Length: 224
Ligand code: TYD
Image (cartoon, rainbow, N blue to C red; front, side, top):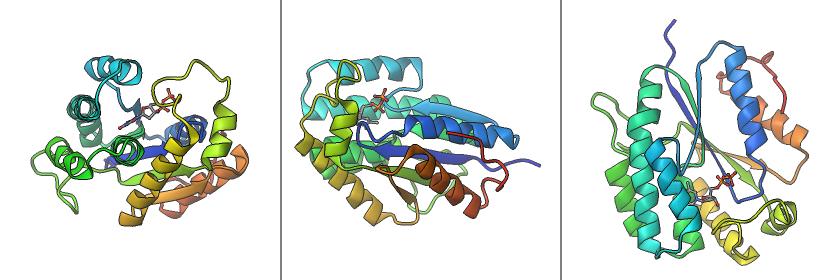
C-alpha cells in the first residue's frame, strides 16, 4: 500500500538533546517498513550545507543571516523534502522554520514580519498539494523544552561552540520564549516534551505520542 508522506521537525534550544531521539524515531519507522529521509537545517543539500557553514561561523548582520537561512531552506525543500514527501517517505528534519522564528526572531530580535514574508515566499507548496495555511509546514513538530540554565551546563565543554552555542543564557531564554509562542499559535502541530527528564522517559513519551496518532505501532519501540 502506498504511504502518505510524513514531515516531522525537531526543535529546541542547543543542548536540549534532540539528536538521539531523532535517530530512535528513524529506527522505529524503519522497523515497520517505512523509508526514512533523515535531514537537517540549515543544510540537507550540498548548497545548503555551504550556507550552514557560513551562518554558523561567519559574522553577518541579521537580515543577511535570515536570507541565507531561507535560501538554504528553499534549496532543501526543492531538492530533498518535497521529492521525499511525494514518494511517501517519512522526513525527519533536525530543525525547520520554527528555529528561524525562535533564533533570528525572538533570540536576535529580528523583524517577525520579514520572517513571515520570507516563509511565505520559500515554503510554497508544489502544484496539486494543499495544506491548511497554503504553506509547507511539518505535520508534527517535536519541541524539546529545556531550562536554558540546564542546557548551558549540558553544553559546557562539549566542543568548540558555534555562533549560536556561544550565546549567553538570556539569549536562549528568548529563543525558548520564541518556541513557546510558535507552539501556542499552532497547538495541533506541536508536541512539547519536557527535556529535563531522563532520556528514557523523554523517549517513552515521544514514542507514545506517535503510537497515539497511529503513525507507529505499539510494538515498534526501538531504543534511544
Ligand atoms: P543544531 O541543529 O543544534 O546542530 P548541531 O546538533 O550540529 O549543533 O545547530 C544548528 C544551529 O543553527 C543552532 O544553534 C540553531 C541555529 N539555527 C538558527 O539560528 N536558525 C534556523 O533557522 C536554524 C534551522 C538553525
